[in-house]
Image (cartoon, rainbow, N blue to C red; front, side):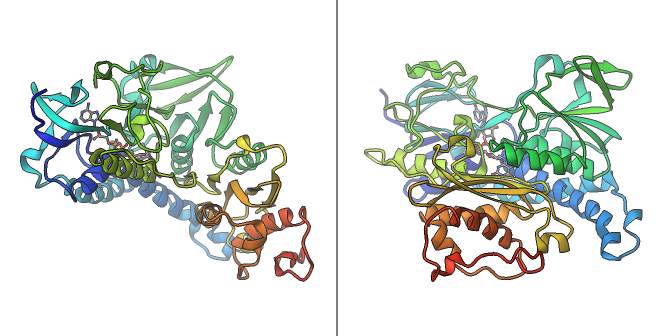
Length: 470
Ligand SMILES: Cc1cc2nc3c(=O)[nH]c(=O)nc-3n(C[C@H](O)[C@H](O)[C@H](O)COP(=O)(O)OP(=O)(O)OC[C@H]3O[C@@H](n4cnc5c(N)ncnc54)[C@H](O)[C@@H]3O)c2cc1C
C-alpha cells in the first residue's frame, strides 16, 4: 500500500467526530476531517438544543395556566406567539451552531466538505480523490426515518430536521412515534396551544420498560394530548392536511410530525469493502469497549453505531475511538452507568439497569409524587419513581421514573449507582426538607424495610406519613 497521507481520517464532524478531533489533535496534526452536508452537529442544529429551546418556551407559556392556582391573575390571557417562539428557537440554535462550527474552522486543507466512501480499511474517497490513513474513524451519525409512502405527502409531513424551520405551526398536528423525541415534541407542541394527537405502534411510552411508571406517565400526559398506542397508522392527504387512519378510526390534522426513529448513516459508506460480515441493517461487528470494527484499523463512534444514540455517549465513543486509533493496541474502556432523560413534565428518566433487565430477586421501592409535599406546593405533583436494588445486598442498580425534576433525580441516582452504594448508604446521607428529593428517599425507604437492619442506624429513620413533613 502507498504511504498514508494522514494518521487519522475522521468521517463526520458531529459530536463524536469533534470529540475524536479534539483528542487526536493533542498528538498529531496529520488528521483529516470529512463532513457531508451542513456543519454544526445534529445536537446543535436539529437535535438536543433547538428541541430544548422549544420545550422551555412551551413550558413558560404552559406554566402561566398554573398562575391562578397560586393566587395570581392574568395567566389565562397569556398565549404563545408561535412564529416568535420559532424565531427564538432559530436564533438560539444559530448561536449554538456557531460554537460548534468553530471547532472545524481553521483546519484549512485538513477539512473537506463531501460525502466520504471507504475504498479499503485505510483509504477513503471524497470528491473523486482517494486519501490514505493509518486509521479511519466513522462518525456519520443518523437521520430521521421517513417511510416512503409518508414522504410522498410532501411538506404536510415534518421531522425534527424540518419542524424548527417552520414559520408557524398549524392548529392541529399528529405526532407519530412516542419514543423520547416524539414525546418531547408532542408535549411541547401541546403546551404551545397546538391540538396534538399522538400515536405509536408499540404499547409503551418514551422507552419506559416498567409498566407502573408507564401507567403513571400515561395518566399524567393524557391531560395534555390524546395518546393512541398499539396502533399502526396510515396517512392520507385530505384537503390541505392529512387524515391519520388507524383501523376504523381516523383523525384530521393539518400537519404530521414523524418521529418513528433514526437510521444510522451507514449507506453509501461502502462498508462491504472492509470484508467483515454486516448484519441485516448493514452494521459491521464492533466492540462497545474499544469502538474498533473487528480487528481492522477502522473505528465507529456515535449514533452511527446505534449503541447508545445520545450525546454524552457519542462524545465518549469519540474519545475512546481517538485514543484507540492512536494506540498500538486498543484498550477496552469501561462505559458509564447508562442514563436516559426525556425532557417532559413529569420528567422521564432511566438510570442503570432497566426494569425489563432485573433479576427475579431484585428489591423494588416506589414513591408516588401525586401527594409529595414540595411537588404539591409547586403544582408539579404527578408521577411515580421506582428504584431497583440487588436482592442479595441492596446495592442500588437502577431506576425508572416520571417525576418532577426527574433529570436531577436520575443524576443523583447515577452517582450512587456508579459508586456501587447500597440503599442503606444513601439513606444515611442528608435529605433537606421540603425538597422533591424526599420522594426519592421514600422509594429508598421502601427498599430499606425489605432488608434486615439495626434500629440504631439512621438509615432506618422512617417517614411521618404526614404530607407537610415527608
Ligand atoms: C430532536 C432530537 C433531540 C435530541 N435530544 C437529545 C438530548 O436531549 N440529549 C441527548 O443526549 N441527545 C439528544 N439527541 C441525540 C443527539 O443529538 C445525538 O446522539 C448526537 O448528536 C449524535 O452525534 P454524532 O456525532 O453521532 O452524529 P452527528 O452530530 O449527526 O454527526 C454526523 C455527521 O456526519 C455527517 N455524515 C454523514 N454521512 C457522511 C458521509 N458519508 N461522509 C461524510 N460525512 C457524513 C453528517 O452530515 C453529520 O454532519 C437528540 C437528537 C434529536 C434528533
